[in-house]
Image 1 (cartoon, one colour):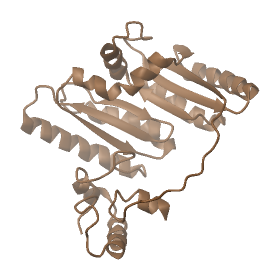
Image 2 (cartoon, one colour):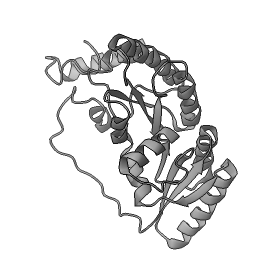
Image 3 (cartoon, one colour):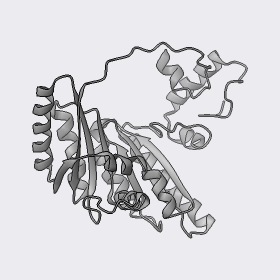
Image 4 (cartoon, helix red, strand yellow):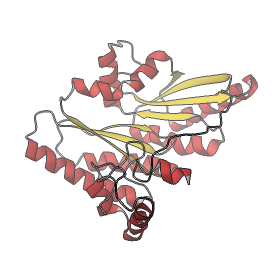
Length: 270
């Protein structure tokens, strides 16, 4: 039940109290930056990590355009492999030092096998780059659009590759920029308007979304992993969600909120 309410974006009710179960923080942690020279090599690390049993806390992906824009935004002159590096940042946490040592050795071997050109510690400067990905876009374009989609974890690599292929077909001034929580299947895509005329920009965005969303749904994914549907993606929600699934959502909405007063006009139309 709690999953249903949390995913409803306020359309089924208001949470006034939450009881949480807290787990102790792992006392041992290490952050690794694996640098690759092609997206394919970087993305091929993901299934290897998932199958390895290392169970990383997070796996973050930054394409090279983000590496450069984030480094420039932060004025980080010594960013590793600034010109051509693609970053995969992996966090491993354990309850024992021996376990951490074993997993770090495994992780280093996996990075080498995947074709990493460098394996370094991801220090605070690297994490600052990752945290400022979105902010750095403002240096490139005053108007941009941030999107997020989610797919099953085992589909993340192939989906990223396909999005890059789709993006290359459209005449955006800057190729689609991608960063991702690739450990949980959540991808963030940024499109930059730059000097495009409004009508051209809107048509390009629409056509890009039509292709990307169709592919994501074909992989068992959905329109949003973190950002939600709200009003912005309502039309796409109705276009791509299977009819039976959408009908069930509407019946649940009417059962919980027959007067349609809870966050109206969001997710889908009644």
